[in-house]
Image (tube, rainbow, N blue to C red; front, side, top):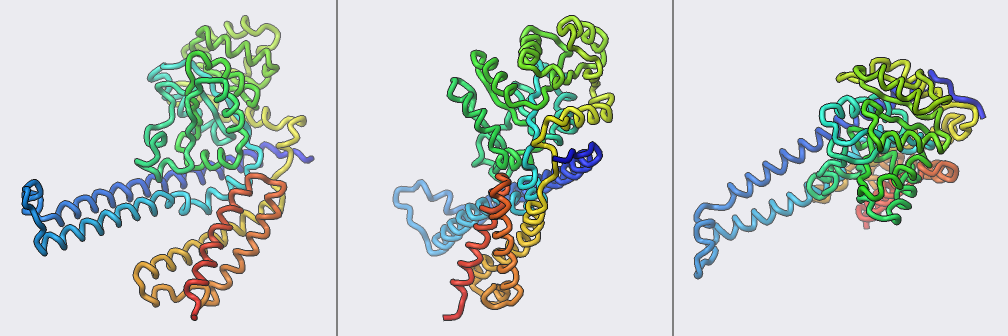
Amino acid sequence: MPMVSKERVLRIIRWRSVAAFAITVVNVAVALLFLGTLAYLLVTILVTIPDSHLSRMGEPSWTLTEEEGWSQALVLVFLVLLVLTYVVIYVLPIVLTLPLSAPIIGLWQYPPTFLFLRPFHRGLLSKPLKRIARRDIAPFGHTYTLSDADIYVPWYVRVPLVLGQLALFSFRFQVVRSSKRLGAIDRAIGRTWLRNANWCMSWNKVFPVASTDEHWRAAVNVFLARADVVFIDVSDLREHVVWEIKRAHTLGMATRMLFLVHADQESRVTSELASLLPGSFDAVRVFAYDSHGLLERDRFRSLLVGVLTPTDRRKRGGPASALSVAAAVFFVITAVPLTVLLSRFWYGLVSRDPTDIADLPSRDPTGIATVGLGLLTLALLLVASRANRPMRFLLIVQTLLLFVAATAIVVMSPG
């Protein structure tokens, strides 16, 4: 199988990073839209209820006047609109970003798995590490770490009903409290399409997993068994950091460990690592950082690409198949007009105005062509997904879009 050049890998990384930034901008914009809409509807509800209505609600003989009855009906309408608005905005980010996220989810068939190890609860020192993880590590693959007070799953992701549009397809994993959860970690890492979706919708691109003190070593062992590269912050060689280094070395990962160290500690830590790993330590795998991030970003990326593309890593040997690329391209081409088509159909049903649904497939040749192209895309996705498992996500989405479009045709067809 032909090798992928470093230049090609870096081009793909740059494209993926640009797409991820655009997805983040859309997510933030939708969140602001949601908060603004929520505030508007709540204020409208409060303004709609008359002051006399509020003052008389506690009276035993309280009955509604005609005006107050209409006000209450309006309040109920606004509450229903609030719920519907939330449901729509809940799925809006993934819908709007499908043209960008679909190629990443469907074509990133073999994302590398990274383990990011660091001393816990380091406060300000964790800020540059988070920046390094987001900018220099995560664009290359799926990055896992143990959760602490500095890197963790945000509260709005843990409670998705509050800000669901920011939590949909975000990574969240239950605390590892038993051996049963360790097996769940291993299975979660193998769900490539879902982790790709998590990667697209996440800002930091890091997947934190919380663990109890009794199970953190076992959790590290699970990650090490799956990891392609291990990144270890060695600025503070505490006891558990030394254990992690020795454990990775025992599992044969000596050449796949990259060490991060604060610039102030570089010379001291380098000598300590040489003593800790006699015969297998190479100073070229030590990278210094300061408060702004890595000091040698180009060398770091070049070495990381070299670690990820040796001749024995065959599964990363070639680019995505032409069929997968074609299916993803057709999906992007058809997803936008299908979404517009269905949004017009939904708006027409709500407004009950036939002129608002004039471009439905049953009445417009353009709509018929859109559905026809969608069926062709579905066939391509079906064939491509047999060899490329992440493409199954696009297959499901395309099936849902076409199902709703077909329903629209049946509902709006004459007679």
